[in-house]
Length: 84
Image 1 (spheres, rainbow, N blue to C red):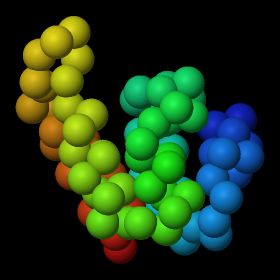
Image 2 (image 1 turned 90 degrees about the horizontal axis):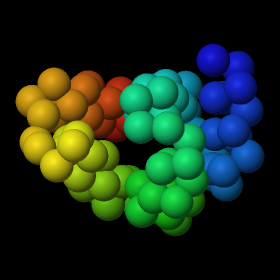
Image 3 (image 1 turned 180 degrees about the vertical axis):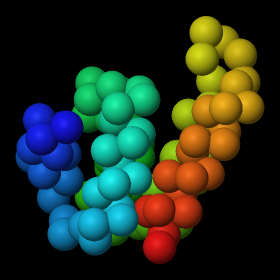
């Protein structure tokens, strides 16, 4: 968990709220740091373009080529945290 926070701090170039950090941690724990590092989600966050960041969270609902309801639900929880 601390390692995840450290990596997020290195990658995110703007100041985040604790809720935003928690949302990103959840995403990273689910999808992995490599995906986050190379994602449009990270780019949107670093531009402080939070509307686009919300759209990017919603794109990550597919696993093994199939839309997963549980991933869509998780992303919506992350969005709620991120925009809190």
